[in-house]
Structure formats: C-alpha cells, structure tokens
Image (cartoon, rainbow, N blue to C red; front, side):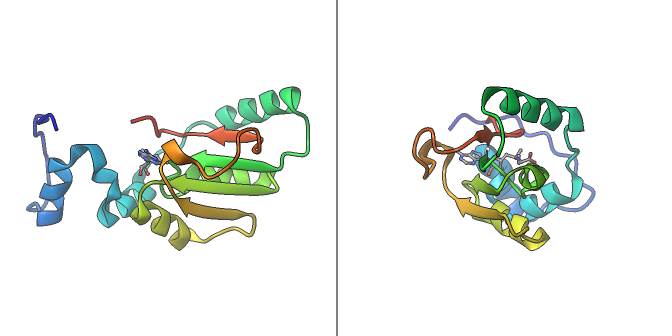
Length: 138
Ligand SMILES: C[S@@+](CC[C@H](N)C(=O)[O-])C[C@H]1O[C@@H](n2cnc3c(N)ncnc32)[C@H](O)[C@@H]1O
C-alpha cells in the first residue's frame, strides 16, 4: 500500500485505534469510532439532489417506486431520505461498524441493511428501481 502523508490535528492524544485508522487510510471508515463520528458530523447534500433524482426516475420508469438500493450507505443518512419514496429501501455497506451505527439510529419499517461489498450486490440485474451511492466513490 502506498504510504500517505500524515497530517493530523488532534485535540486529544491519539489512541492506538486512531493510529491504526491513519495507517489504514484506505479503510478507516471501518472502525466503530469513525462510524459514530461520521453519523454525528457529516453534512447532507441539498434536498434538490433527491428531488431531481426522483423526477428523473418518474420520467424513466414511472411509479410505483418499489426498491431502492443505497450502496456505500454508511450510517444510513441517504438511505433514510429515500424511505418515504420507496416501498423498500436497502442500505448496503462493506463496513459492519457503519451498518451497526445505521441500525442504532433506528430502522424504519421499510428500510433494511446488508453488509456486502459494492462489487457483489446481492440482487439480480434489472431487479431494482434505483441505486444510489452518496459520497461513496473511493
Ligand atoms: C463517506 S461514506 C458515505 C456514507 C453515506 N453514503 C452518506 O452519504 O453519508 C462512504 C461509505 O462507503 C463505504 N464503502 C467503501 N468501499 C465500499 C465497498 N467496496 N463496498 C461497499 N461499501 C463501501 C464505506 O464503508 C463508507 O461507509
């Protein structure tokens, strides 16, 4: 793995988990600590993004909107935004810690979560109405 420059500004001394996080820069999102901080502090995209997406889907496919997959769902922030518009929404993430944090926030009746890599989504081609990947291109 390529060594990345280490630029850290910490208010408190770094723990072993912090150091591991920095060293494993490509997969730091897998720690429980990161998942919890992510859920607390991330800023959401504007509502227009969802609104434009749904308008496009309505023109292309029409209603009802049955199944949406949110790949790289993290703690489920985008997943939950989709819930009012689809019969079923499934959040998928490679990180168990992120999925656990998503479940801790509270699972809506039509929302479920799966731990899986984006490279192996457990659904047949053409079987879903929408796949989103919000802030999840790494
Ligand atoms: C920056 S977070 C975005 C989370 C969420 N989509 C949001 O909008 O807040 C990126 C997420 O992508 C996930 N991820 C990274 N590589 C992945 C992969 N190959 N398959 C599935 N999820 C992946 C990470 O675990 C992390 O939760």
